Length: 388
Image (cartoon, rainbow, N blue to C red):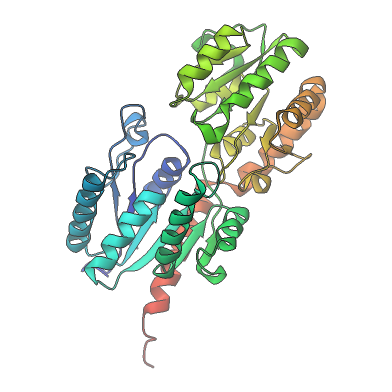
């Protein structure tokens, strides 16, 4: 521990771009008990297609930014980031280093191990890269690296049971290393529907289904096109609103325009409450997820959810109670959407159940409490017992 007697905690993440990990980390960092922890956040820079969550939300944390630690992978840039992280570890002298996301998990843990310091290591899997990201050969290499790193890590945190089980299945870590920590977040009060509609210049005569997230291959935005084509025929008064951006946005937007599909693109949205206020339900079409925060936010706002059965989705959405968790084919997604659009009373009841459960289980206070307990138990486990 430091001279102050506090536990010195260094948290490392590749970048604080708008998304689940940034929301979680900012919540933890803002609420950790300052009388117990002295903490530092180490992160890289967002690239030109991303929004920095801390800057946009004017969140003031103790942060050190490392060149080369961002999204881009390059040997020289990553090596430079590794050396800079190592230097920072020497200066800050942490008791615990907690890494988040794959790249920061690799560089951060390598940096700690190269210092030969007696530092406790924690790593969080906010999801994993086992499905839908890389070829089988690249995935095998990632699994091998993660196995080696896991063997050097004291505690592995997973955002859900299913994510943990999938990691264990390929031999990453052992069961007693893992702690399940559900996400925790908060949403502001929702504006009126009229105010939300006017903010985005949307027609109040339409009903809206929302989808939040990055427009990348693993999120399967192509399914949104198929769903929109089905809505165009069966529900001409319903439109999909896509709040998000990414490398596939231009392609999806062009396809939607060419076929005159009922889709509205609003880009990255920090005022998530406005999107929730104008939506009747939220959908998720991914092939792979961790524990998607957008679904928790939707449920906190009293919206039912239709989502593919991937990652730990089935742990946060109770099938046929707070929404529908369905196979990844578009037909199954459409059937569930149809059930909620056609029966508004069922949708309302599911939304109410979802809200009660989400507000109870996914608070920031609980998230912070869970992390503090992990850190304190870890420190306690390595300290010699006091003499009588």
